[in-house]
Amino acid sequence: MKALMYTALLAVAACSAGNGSGDKIADTPIPTPIVAEHASELKLIRATTAYSDWSVIRTYPIHVHELGRDVLFVVGDIGGLRDPLDRASLLQFWGLEGDELINMTDRMNPSHLRAEIPRDVQIADFTGDGLDDIFINNHGTEHTDPFTGEQNQLLVQTLTGGFENWTDSLPQITDFGHGSSFGDLDSDGDLDIFVNNLGDDDRNVSYILENNGTGVFTQSSTVQSDQFVKLTHPDYEWLPEAGTFSQVIDMDADGDEDIFCGSISGSWKPADGLDPFSLWYENRDGKFVGRHTEQLRFPYTSNHVWKFEKFDFDRDGDWDLIQSGHNRWTGELYIQMYENLRGGEWQNVSSTVFPNQGEIPSIGVFTLQIIDFDQDGDEDIAVRGSFGVVNLVNNGAVFSVERRQIFPRGKYLDLNADGLLDEIYYNEDDRHFYARING
Picture (tube, helix red, strand yellow):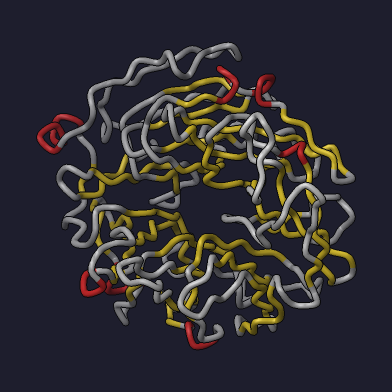
């Protein structure tokens, strides 16, 4: 494993849990959290200004063509029950300029576009010009009943720097969004978007946004249209038509993009209390046929599944799935790996590839970043929570614990365009971002 070598910009004690595949994540000691008064001792690059918006945030690395390097895109989430007068959050950008970490929002978001409780963000080239754009799946407030929902948003990157507001190129729909994913669903060579919707005042259901190739989208079909064939099951009185946090993925390796909707619960559960199965829509020449598999069941009771990510962990050319979730009663956090056996068959290989069968310490609500952070050619998994980080190093499809440190709310990215991965993270105590530069 190639070790990360950092410059004098970082001086912090790291905790390593060893390199064997049998290392237990849960047994790794937790170091003292970073707090504001320690910042000068750590010799980190501290942002020149504080983050002025809501402290509950989500962060996304994005490459900016005009700068030639990565910046951090930040969305705020104030919680659904806050008063509507307080809810809109400025979409912000943070990056490195010389030796300073600065707020680049005025340059990147000149119209000062805001979002109302963003639930999910997709970064991809939606206009076909080779530049990364930003689709924001919004949730809207839960302060009123019924929920009012909110318009999704699209930011398009320009060649001269910054992002333009292209929200008018989306259908003007108020969604109660709970996730989104993208892929070429109509096989025409551009990226379409599947929007998960749990309904709002308009009772909108999940649907496909079809791209005309230039970033102009139309709502081509919903899960209640004839293009979708709803799944039925003799043991269930009803089944939901879509789960949350979908993935557009070729589930059966037939060359067509399918829609995977995650674990779902109907009106009945088996005796073990687990979610009964996972729902997916098989793409049959543009018609999406509801199917299910129990091979993707989350293997823990009383669970809440957060998200699925596609990840070719074994480098065999097809997408596997990594699933994150938690036990509502015990607070235990888990990630699970499912190997794609092709033809719609899957196998849970978590006990083989993860230490401690994928159990994660209580680090708060966490996100997964799949990235080659040790830069050895294999993609690894950074598990970042509110209170800490667990890095799982890919040692040829078997993962070991590399380190666990208190760098919450952050991401790996190349801040200075030197080809090495740096880190930028948010300190909730002093509301500043910090950069950790990889030398």
